[in-house]
Image (cartoon, rainbow, N blue to C red):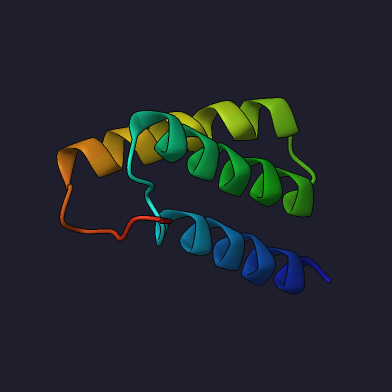
Length: 72
């Protein structure tokens, strides 16, 4: 069961990062959703997961604008 949670968390995380968003707000929402989903699957704190995921996605997308695609 633990292995399935880890695989699901990785899938949610990578899927969220695959679509950065066109604006900083979209990037924060996409990353936050990925972080929330990952935290929920792994039994972590969903609020913390959403904050960390949103911040991480914004930071990644802003420093690597050509590395991801827009959700639009």
